[in-house]
Every structure is written in structure tokens, then in C-alpha cells.
Length: 152
Image 1 (cartoon, rainbow, N blue to C red):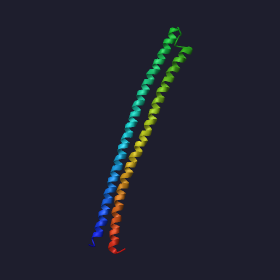
Image 2 (image 1 turned 30 degrees about the vertical axis):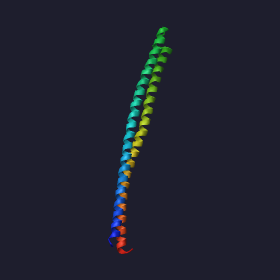
Image 3 (image 1 turned 45 degrees about the vertical axis):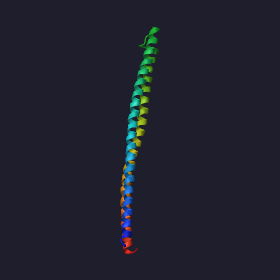
Image 4 (image 1 turned 90 degrees about the vertical axis):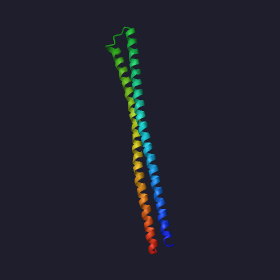
């Protein structure tokens, strides 16, 4: 009968350790999965940004072509003066639009990548905390058992 309290302390500690491990595994897996989703979002943002940048480039070429047609229909020399400046500015603005789209996509992707890194760090911390909780539970149980045995 005297061994029953020691058994109960050990059983309780064992159950607490199992629960701490299960919770740590669940939480770290959840964070790892979310990190993977954030990586997927970053890749998606970059792909959509590249697609939008390509469309902007094509739209810019369309505007440039329209400007060339308009100038040619009026008999204006496109190689010098204001006409050449207009065509150069059209090309420059089109390229700036394309670069702005790509830059915005990279900034958004960077945010997702930072989120993913934070989640992975959180998963690692959760694993460490879970192991620490298990050790603490088992050490506490051992100390309680020792204290009971010594009559403290």
C-alpha cells in the first residue's frame, strides 16, 4: 500500500510528459505546415508578378507601336526631335511599370518568406519547449517521490 502514492506520482508524471510531447509535436507540425504554405504563397506572388510584368511589357510595346503608327501617319520623322523623345519616354515608362510590378511582387514574396522563417523558428522553439516540459515533469516527479520517501 505504501508504494501506491509513488506509482500515482509516476503515472501522473508519465501522462503529463506524454501530453507535453503530443502538444509539442502537434504545434511544431502545424507551424511547419504553415511555413510551407507561406513558401507557396511567396512562389505564387512571384509567378503572378512575373506574369503581370510580362503583360505590362506587352502593353507598353502596344502603346509604343500605336505612337509610331500615329507619328508615321502624320509624316513625322521618328528618329529625332520631339517624336524620338516621345518614343523613348514611352519605352522608359513601360519599363518602369514592369520593374515596379516585379519589385512589388518581390516585396510581397519577401514578407511571406519572413513569415515562413518565423514559423519555422517557432516550430523549433516549440520542439525545444516540449522536450524541456517533459524533462521538467519527470524531474518534478522524481523530486516528489524522493521527498515523500524521506518524509519531507
